[in-house]
Length: 299
Image (tube, rainbow, N blue to C red; front, side, top):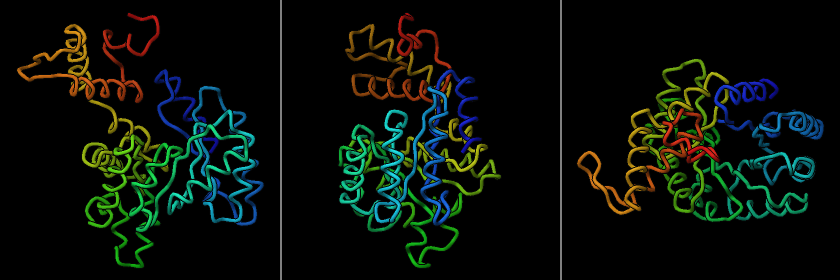
């Protein structure tokens, strides 16, 4: 966790913005019986982090004996410091409501929830879960999802390549992405366990971003962060086109325009504005004429 926070600080200086979140883990990271001490350590780490840091915490699931203590300690003491709380193994809207009530009890009712869907039943309820106003993002728990099928999905379904080919896994990913986009939430793609295989990592991140509609992705190793950022960032050509099209639209007072022989109107202006937003959020260098959109005072 300390290494992750240090890397975040270094890349924040490099890019001039915080381009990824660090999620401190209290679920798989806490030893059995040591949940309270682990939560206290997480609070100490988050308290000492830079003001520019974007920090979240994954607590135990709502059915775990440590859940309420996690929320009281972490949300209660870090309400002003966290960007969100991650809740694993969410099965239904009822679990979201339990987490929301725990936030309110900890005087952290303003914090958004990111939830982790890890079972076939939860995938079935993805649209209901995404519709809850407290939910900001849904992540897909690949390994638990595969395990929940009792061997019906082979181990290959958890691999960097197999998770994009097995029909049940692919269907779950598409359901979650569709549910999120239907309700204006952020779909967050699952991990790739082959953290030493750069080619597999790059291909998985690219497919998640370009084919499945995901706008965020988890990493489990520092070496995965830059490939993810690259895959989820617009290309230079995309940024250049978006800049020109937005400028042309603005010049025409957002009436339809022709660009490279193609018609553009308010629907495509919205899309290309999102390209520029994504470029800014992932630390890409914007053309000078686009920088003013994101830098107060710069024209």
